Length: 275
Ligand code: AMP
Ligand code: ZN
Ligand code: FE
Ligand code: FE
Image 1 (cartoon, helix red, strand yellow):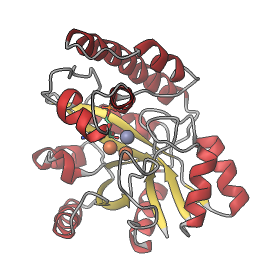
Image 2 (cartoon, protein in one colour):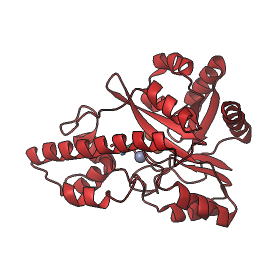
Image 3 (tube, protein in one colour):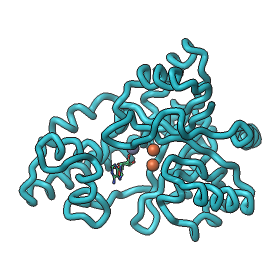
């Protein structure tokens, strides 16, 4: 069983790379990819743990691009996690994450719900770790200002909510190009959640390789819609659970949403053609 969308403590997941691989093994997954937000910091540890257990790890990442003030997540597979240009690009991405978290913490303080932002940033300061709004959400929950991550996004952190601060980031075409530079292929993450269908033909022309048609938050009709779009545009299909380690974020049960082997073969073919 194949799951190409998993998060660890290198970004906003709750499991270490080793613990995640152990859980994946228990869930009978055989091929996995760790796709942390804007960092490859977990890749080597996850790869070593996977080798020990006889799982295959496809090196991966989930990079946040910005299109018309909206976040567009782009997955990269088969990347060289140590590629220098990619590393420099990700350093910039993570620096803006820190800037944004500080700005959002200032807003929260002004709203009367202060969080200890420097301790959050301190925890995220380990080399290559990336911080995101879920860290603020967890602090709001711990401070009794929100019930859970969803509630914190709904009340404070989501797009258009009072503590929201926009990100500064690269357009999706630049993100696709940097993934190719690092030797990888690019897939548009959870298009059913982002709803940028009008943009997808241009992204395909810019070199997008696949659509993540299969995802925990895609109903069957949504998956079929993106499978059809991928076929029409000559793109492959990727998929995974987007598992963040169970509650509170992401109710995905590991092993519940997997990618069919024939789709994985299509991705491998695409990666081979790029290489
Ligand atoms: P950021 O990377 O700072 O933009 O935070 C976005 C991340 O927060 C997403 O990748 C999800 O993991 C998580 N997220 C986004 N929206 C929600 C929500 N409504 N409830 C819980 N987590 C969310
Ligand atoms: Zn996440
Ligand atoms: Fe995402
Ligand atoms: Fe994700």
